[in-house]
Image (cartoon, rainbow, N blue to C red; front, side, top):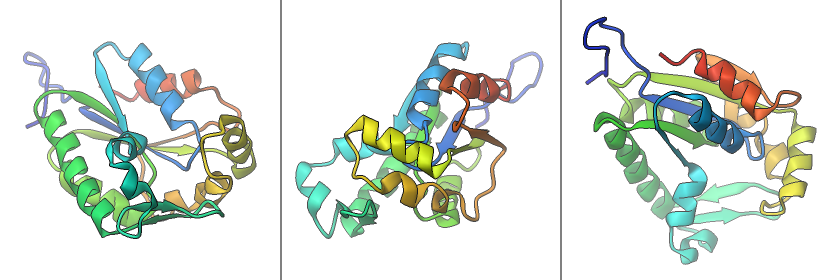
Length: 187
């Protein structure tokens, strides 16, 4: 079911998917979008999913592992929970919640296809969040909560084979500027 203006027939954006590498600025953009968009939007991301998982899954072959070089390795239990989470996010949007998804498509186009399938029938704005790998790596060090190397290893690979409605680049643009660019595309 698509949400629309009762009298004008306009179809409104129900989901905004922000995809970019670690430390590219997605979470900051999501918070700014919540501030500038006129309606309330939920912001949910891959970090939300990982934080909700038992600690034992954050260091197991079946769950998710963060290698010393920044590589992220996911196992079958992670994939099963991720699939359920994606369907749950889609169900929230179908129930009327407007959702901003803060994602890292480590599987490139295959990751986007999983989301496209789950979000089928919903009005989605696909946004690529890009950032120069050296700048993202600097942010990663400043954050102190990421394995060093994640930002550089993900900066380009997460965008390979993906199709976006809009790209923003946080290398030199602030989160609020990017959020306003995105918000202008939201109906």
